[in-house]
Image (cartoon, rainbow, N blue to C red; front, side, top):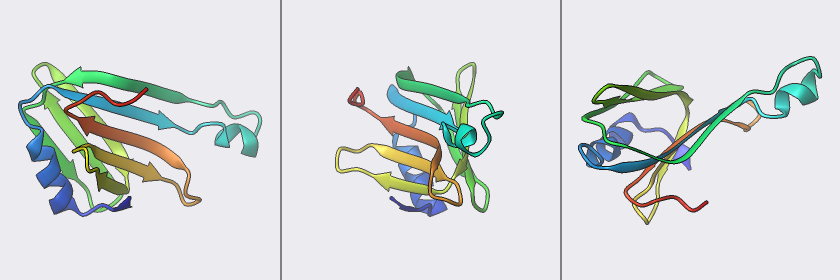
Length: 116
């Protein structure tokens, strides 16, 4: 992965417009919080191979970034994104990392299901 270039990511988001897209969305403070302070609660959200269709996808911010996907009846968004990669299989991978390099958020888009 490399640091987000807004123009490149926007171009990749536009390639998925108005198509059925598989997505992976994950956010977590993971066990990191509990390791630092056992009174802290570990929180996580995880969706793998959900399907959606968006008619507008946009990246905003100056870094960390936010990506929003406008659906017929709502939105999917991920905030805190720092890095991206477009794979040889055509998957757009976006991730956010904290100061210690730990994953805090991931948003991935693909025309084919992700491996489980």
